Image (cartoon, rainbow, N blue to C red; front, side):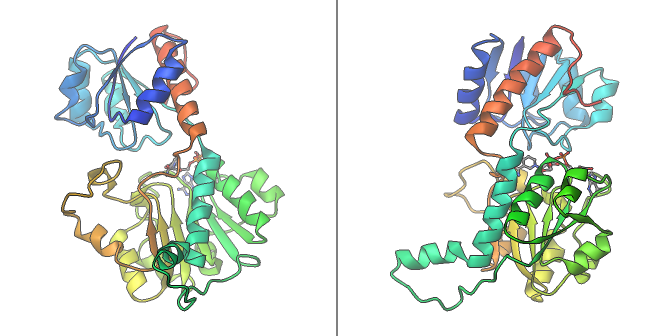
Length: 329
Ligand code: NAD
């Protein structure tokens, strides 16, 4: 099937072309991000393939449908960027890659925890400048600390397993209990208890109307002083301004984020020669106890391989009119 692939980077093309060698779809790669103004590029393509920051709102979907697009192929798990109601009204089928790197994402969350705690990002710069002083680099043992995990699906469970290995106590909150987490000693509690008891809080739930700004002034007030907050899930789980206030008042001791509310204006692009216009982001990155990565938690060889394989299989299911296990209904 002929597919317009949006937001293409060289690595996407490399892995998709390799996977496609056994499918022979006609993949046409566009660097442009999909939005209202670029949707015209997909005219007469029955399918489009998109990633996390492509915007599939109702008016974009209408242009796509008008141009003959019937299949939305997400090469990611999250689908908060798609207006599913509008897609259904337009008779479009939406498929995704439900899991591609839960280990990669959980391991990246651990990387943020370790780096923030032991200040490895500061140590790296100091040693390069022959500054071997330890002042300001004091960390704490993870052993014996309490880690609160919000969202205990694939990534949250793996994070729990890894942190259990460090000797941490695991508290959890989810709308469903994951028996696997309980098996390793994870204890499900109310959100308020998780906020009050955790030394480290890590977010692994999807972005939905219920979880939007889950971390806000009120929830931060319930947390321990010097709490470490980790977000590798979706930026809008956090009210960024409330977190900045929490950092300024020293309530939040550490912040590690791989995602950011307004990341679609920034992430995945080399803006090193540009003036960044987002003052909130600029403020956030001035804090010495904040570590930001640009939505790279998923970015492992295994993930790109899995994304490409599942995407090509999903396209084949759509083309041949088969039911697809990865369809979002
Ligand atoms: P998953 O679907 O396996 O798990 C999500 C869990 O969140 C489920 O157990 C679900 O019950 C729970 N949940 C849903 N609503 C909730 C609520 N209101 N409160 C608490 N828990 C709730 O997903 P996953 O594969 O573990 O991924 C988790 C998130 O990680 C995804 O939603 C996605 O946004 C994000 N993600 C980020 C990257 C990255 O590169 N940074 C990569 C992949 C996924």
